[in-house]
Image 1 (cartoon, helix red, strand yellow):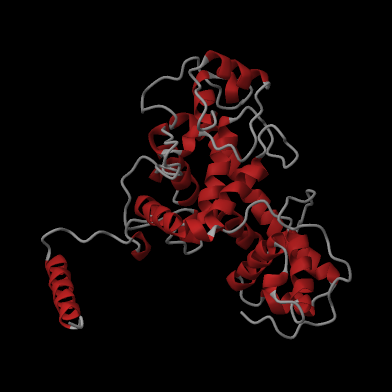
Image 2 (cartoon, rainbow, N blue to C red; image 1 turned 30 degrees about the horizontal axis):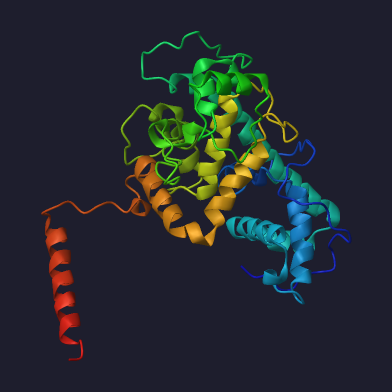
Length: 352
């Protein structure tokens, strides 16, 4: 991706942080950017003010002629990485922005934002009902029953959804804890991760990475959104359908994991409208906290293992899944023989 040759057709005033949801605006024109925005929001950055992202990004390209990216704030660096990912994912976008007026840049941002918001709204709507099929073993009844079209009795108001949303490290079975969560006396911030993120809903205080973001509930929701609702209860197949196939997606992204986790958390809550100003669900803080973990260089090994695990669940036929070689296969014997030869050669080269 080239970032040279910015023109003078750029806004003269920088907007606020783009990596926060902006005011809702309607873009009525149908455009391929809307479809692109749907996928970009799900897989790269969900809660974003796209007009500001583009405006800030074009200004920053000019600024970086004199100031390297490393000298910018952490927030600006993250925002610029998202901007560059957007440019890389849509050929010709940089030229369109550089040659366009301020109004054109804002219009492009609104189109992308319309797609991202539309996808988020669609996923929120479908998961509201579908989530109830996954939170208990198949054919088990939820008691008391939960309404599919209303969320007022979810969240900490219900025994089942409350137990899943209970922050890791707290004991939902403790009466005082449960009542304090229900009354709001014990508030839950977005960076207090719920137990449903963990495999078997079990949190290891000595090893917080153990089972993190590996729950069956998350996998069901991921398949529902990306590989089609019908794929949730079926064994993975080589053929793919749904949003992943539509956009040529054959491996997960860490941002898509964070997106699905955010959607599941909201679906379990009692909040009826996904809003950045909703301090009860605090969805933006939750989403950002997961991205902070994924982008931490010190956690790169664990993040890589997590992505490999997810690819095996969702895209098992993809090379990104890093399939294990079958024991006693010809391939495994070839590799073992090659390893033995290499080790022998290394021993022979050790100085006496």
